[in-house]
Amino acid sequence: MCKEGEESLHFYKQETVQQIIGYQWHSTTQYVLKMLFTIYMFMFVIPYILVATGSQFGTDNQAILLMICNIPQYLLFMIELTQISHQGFSYF
Image (cartoon, rainbow, N blue to C red; front, side):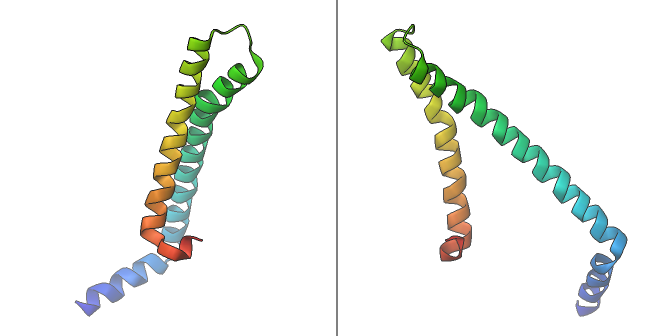
């Protein structure tokens, strides 16, 4: 059992493997961040700006736009709760 652990440790310490893992991590985080930014812009910022600046919308339409704004806030809150539950007080 220890021999397998030492072999896998040796494997992960190789420079090529570390570069591959680093590239995958970078490309994945970039994709996720771009997706979160796009969702936040189209589902929070734009509807909120329309409500804040637009008096041409009726009260019903403004209420719908504000409900749309709640969706990304709820999702981001759930992400934060998940991170807090995994990291505990070290999150802060």
